[in-house]
Image (cartoon, rainbow, N blue to C red; front, side):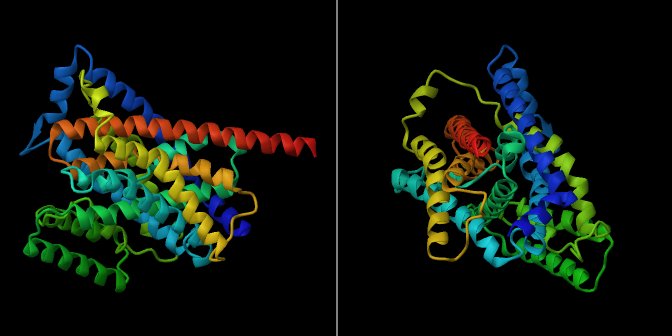
Length: 392
């Protein structure tokens, strides 16, 4: 187990991924604060108008959420593929711990939300507290420096990647409101063509990217959210042996910085331009607000810890020797940092602008609370371990 973790952590792509994600988390925090301040300043009208400005037939915000975020999902797909072939998910015994943790981290928050919202117009928001923002979570973890065990970094990374896959499946299955079988059929036909290119060992990236753009267009018009195209495209791009010479590695390496420092910050700026009205405090007591708060702040750590404990207890997997249940619970709170994916699901779950606006603010409050609790709990736990080591 330790050898696998060290091999994964020492790989260039994992180091680059972890460094970019933790830096991106800090950039996202700065962008969110700046966006909230601008949206509630004397420049509010001009700032909000910027995101609603038309580019072609759609707004700038639309192109960011439905266009640029497809590239983010492409990177998620490439990372997931690498995890499956060479990373934490390549060994089923070692993969079961983060898989069960992610499963619990999705089911329990969704269950809490539905408990409060079943039968109401806002029941469709059950997917909101299921998500984990990998950039924010790793950004908070990085603030603790070298005291964090390697296995904890790998566990959180694998957990968040699986969590993102779960969110993608939820979006594809539950947030498709209407379906055009013709457009979906064309999109699947293009996917099949790209898969054939993969099997015939075509290692030129250009036909895959051109095919991906065309597939995105037809997926957009099929009713299924177009960003799913990014994940599908990732899995037909040849992985090969995963070395630096493969197009999968080169594309993943190329996308890290643009996604971390351009696409996600733009998404944060566009989607946290929240005007805080006098009724924002009252929104905290609404059912969907309580579902999001309790789902992210309590549901995430409970689900992650409980399902991990059950998996270890029945002998399906083992807890790494340098981890303990206090650390797993602390990581569970970091899993409650929803932000990017939670906001993304919110845009799909609700049509009412007022509800969307309130839900975004609730997500920010909940993510901040969960992140602070997780950070303080880990800091205390790691401090105790350090003192114990010195005493011995």
